[in-house]
Image (tube, rainbow, N blue to C red; front, side, top):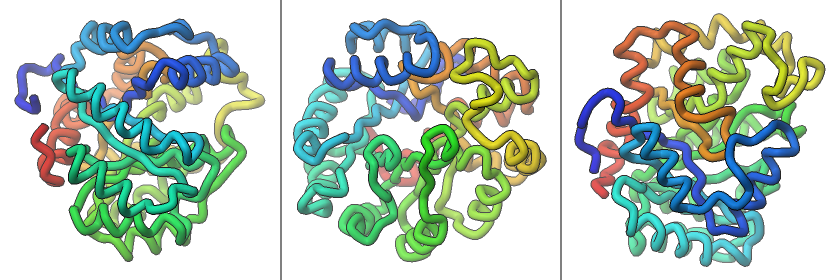
Length: 304
């Protein structure tokens, strides 16, 4: 499953194929901000075909419950879905109201064989680094499994996370490979400092290249929002841009790049063009599109 079969045969570490009701809701949410390249009635089979058309050989399928009562059902659905799809790597999730987060996390990791866990605190409307979440972190730390957690785009969501609580979590649970999804956009200075201090951290550049290309070109039309409502403080982007460029020189082995498919900022070919706009070295591109995600899985003991 994880073998290398060519440069075009990529790993996408950020995909959301969900049960039909949740898929429709996710696509409807996206359409509030931009024209969608997929229809609300997109099926799992059609989503898989879209990945295949983009030469995606392996993908992380990420789910997250919006309400506590769907937690167990959603994790079970992801287990069953991914078990029938070669190259699909399941990640589980919990809700802050899940009564026994340690037990549900252990079920996902041990019984279901998931690669790790995913949290989207803004969509799930809770603090991912609150004390109530320690059961999740204790299990992940024990098994040295990864956590993918949404970070960044605070202005877009109108929310923010407690940075001091995040740092304390990194210190308390050093065996968890924490992937900062969206790379704290646009706080790249902070991202760089954290990668320097915490060797277990990774960045996921999902949506970042596209957002920064829009910023650099001023081509706002039809891309999520207009310039007066750009999904970040424009001055903050300007101030952090040099740090963004340095990330690929300082930490090329700890950055991955996903799509948010099917609700990202375009189809895979467009997202690749957005990355190519920044003229990264070919080996760095290869690391982002394939090598680093494969190494992350190998480091945390996932074999499919």
